[in-house]
Amino acid sequence: MPIPEPDVWGLAFCDVHAGRLKSAVLRRDDGYAEDVPEMIASYFGPPEAHHVKLLGSLSGRVLDVGCGVGRHVLWLQERGIEVVGIDHSPGAIEVARQRGCSEVHLGGVADVDFPEGHFDAAIMLGNNAGIGGTVEGCVTLFERLRRWVRPRGRLMAESRDPVVSNHPNHLIYDEANRAAGRPSGQVRWRLECRERIGEWFCVMLFQPQELEQVIARAGWHVTDTTTHDGALFVTHAKVPTADEST
Image 1 (tube, rainbow, N blue to C red):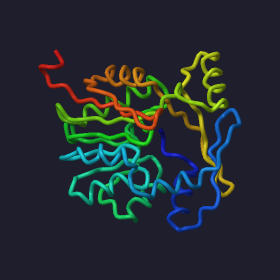
Image 2: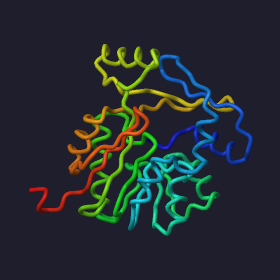
Image 3: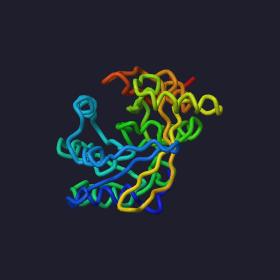
Image 4: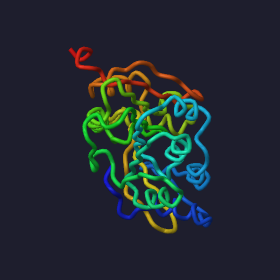
């Protein structure tokens, strides 16, 4: 995902941080819209319960991909874990720094660079597994991440299964995607806040077996997948050693 112009997500995050966000609308490209100020404000709270368990298993140096305003970065910092966050929103990074995040960088996976094997783990929580926008875009993203994580280092990537839905509107959208030859889980959104309209962006929603295949294509060894709250799931993988790769 490129650095946005205008940075409407950053504007909304800054408004929450200043205590003045009144309305923000997340609009899908078929016209469906949700008022999401409470969702945006939730990024300032503590990690969700199932994330706490995952974060508590980490050690060493961790990369948080799509760190937003830093709720996972702060949680790990407070427990003595060395953590680096990256996000493509300038406003999100500014707020993360104001909140006390020690090391956060502006840019997506394609925009920043780290030494090979620099991290012990990479996390993509909060449905961030699909920020590559397309299947091939996600494969490329996971390939780049793999270079930054040491052999036997870990990956945690979270997505939402588009098939596990009881909302008729979402099911209709998924069917329209299939009819147009697109993956059912490819969703195009934009955020609107304070009369500013953000750019359209695509996010992939994967079924568990689809995400496992994408991660494996990028050279990771998938170890398992854990499900939370029905539709949410986290796929776990590791970087294979040279012996394991052959």
